[in-house]
Image (spheres, rainbow, N blue to C red):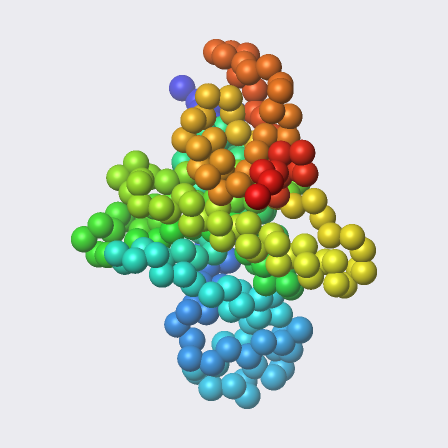
Length: 249
């Protein structure tokens, strides 16, 4: 029997996606291996022969990548910005993953790489202990992304690595990055700073609610009726809290 048309289309799309990722890996995957990085605004092919074999010419966007300082979380764990090939891990851990979600996550990561400010809010925790390494995931065990609308989400820590503070470290670092971004925008535009960070947490997600509350987040509308079962709804959480929610000291 002939293969259904939607199956052929899916196979063709997967082949094109795999080829695109191969090209991106060839362009950006060898940056860590090079000894010297020449950052230019425009690559002139006629001048490429003037550099030695240890020199890599990359676009200007790579300059922002080096501004993020990796954080050592102890026990072989490192907090780092997510890379393009980490999109597969993020998508596999997202409870709302769909046929189009992988492409959306790749766009989010690519947009951050291109950000000239060097602010990185799409973050991950990588375990470098070889005894705990898992083939195919590049040792990535936790992630957090920032959606195109500015909300933080997809906060996930693999079950075997929970209760080590990875989730709190990801959220705290993203909050610091967003604060720096808002300060830069305020200085450049000479306008009032933005309101802060926000995220949406589904009713009944007690682990996320406890974590966000611990770091000072509050519900934007704490008096909203709580849903159960199919009526559960994502509630907006904000930081810093509005003046009416702040505790006086």
